[in-house]
Amino acid sequence: MVLKTDTCRFSGLKIYPGHGLRLTKIDCQSYLFLNGKCKKMWEQRKKPAKLAWTAQFRKAHKKDLTAETARKKKRTVKTNNRSLVGASLELIQKRRGEKTEVRAAARDAALREIKERTRKAKDAKKVASKNAPAGGKGAAVKKIAAKGPAGSKLR
Image (cartoon, rainbow, N blue to C red; front, side, top):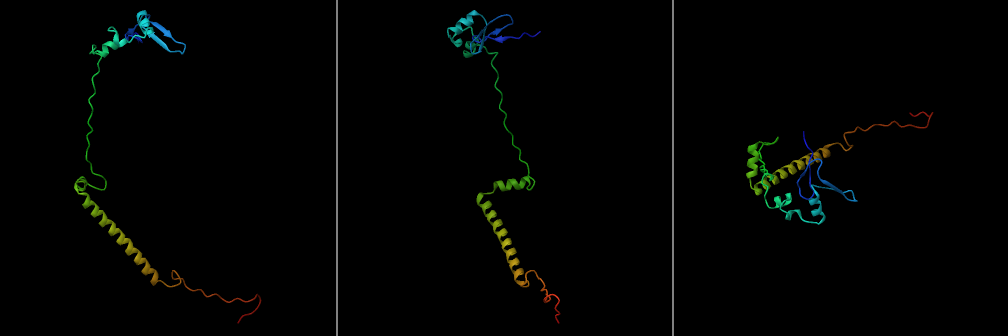
C-alpha cells in the first residue's frame, strides 16, 4: 500500500494522510503545513533556512548527504571523418591540408577555364550565323502568283 504524502510549505518535512493544516487564501493559494508550529512560524515570516530543524537549513548547511544528487558526467562528442559522395576521405584530408593561396589559385584557374569554354562557344555560334544564308535559317524564297481582279483573264 502506497501512502500519498505531501510536503510542508515551511519545514519541507513529509505530511502523512490525516495530518497537517491547510491554509487557503482569498486568491485561492493553498498552503499545507505539518503542524501549528510550522503555520505560526510562517505567519511570523521566519526564514526556514535559519531554523535548524527544517529541511532548508539542513540543505543549506550540507547536513543531509543522502539527498544530494550526483552530478552527471558530461559526454564528449566524438567526431568521425567520413568520405562524401563526390570525394574520398584521402582527397578531403589533402584539400584540408592545403594552404588558402593554393586553393585560391586552383579556383581561379578553374574559373578561367570555364570562361574560355563559354567564349569559344559564343565565337563558334557567331561564325555559324555569319556563314548561314541571309534569309534567316535557310528559308527558300517562295514565288507568289500575280492575281488580278476576279473574273479577268491574265496571260
